[in-house]
Length: 282
Ligand SMILES: [Zn+2]
Image (cartoon, rainbow, N blue to C red; front, side, top):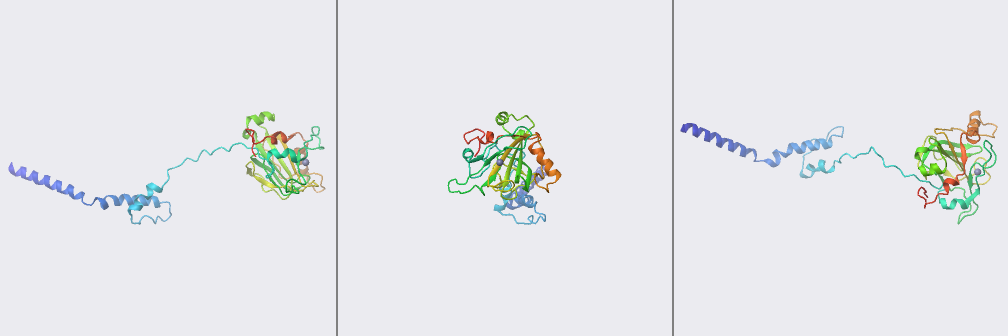
C-alpha cells in the first residue's frame, strides 16, 4: 500500500515537472510558427513566394494585421449627378443668350432651309477678339454617335446621344420627351478633327474640340443642334452638297436633317438653365 502511494506521488511530481518545462521558453517556441505563417500569407501574392524565409521580428509580426486592408465593396459605384454644361468652356450658361449670332429659326417639318440650331459667335468680347479656338464641351453626359472630321456642311462635327433614362423627370417633361426617346446634341464647324471618337462615353463638360470655321461656315462660330429621336442611332459618316459625297453620306444627312426621325427643337430651352436652377450646371 505504502509502495503504491509512493509511486503515485512520484508520477504526480514528474507530471508537474514536465508541465513546468513546457512553459520555459514561450517567447520563441510558441510565437515563431505563428509569425512565419502570417508572413508567408503576406508574401504569398509574389510569384516566387520569396518572403517566407524572412526572419520574423517584433515589427514584422504586426505587419499582416496592420497593413492588409479589409475587403472593401466596389460593386455599387456612386451615381454621377445630372449636369447641364455650357457648350463653350469659357462662357457660362448665363452668358450664352448674349453671344447668340443666329437663333433657332425652325423650318416647316421636313424642310432644309432656315436654321435647325443656334449659333454662338462674336467679334469682340472682353479681351477676346474672336470666338475662334474657344473650347467646345459636351452639354450632357452621353455616348458619341458621330465624330466626323471635315464633312460638309457640318465641318468637324460631333453628335452625342443622351438616353431618356439619364434625364431628370423634370427636364424630360418640360421638353415633352417620350419615354424611350433620346436627346441628340450636335456640335458643328469645329476647328480640328473631334477630340472624341465614335462610341466614346463622355461626361458633361468633357472637351470635344474648339470653335472653328470648318464646313459651311464663313466666320468662326459654334452651331449647336438638339433633336429628339429613337435611341441607338449612329452616323459614322455624313455629308451633302459635295460632288464626291457617297450615297451613304447623303442618306445619313437626310435621315438626320429632314426625315422627321430626329425632331429638332430650340437648344436654348435647355441652355437657359442657370446655376440657380436645380438641374442647371455651369
Ligand atoms: Zn448655325
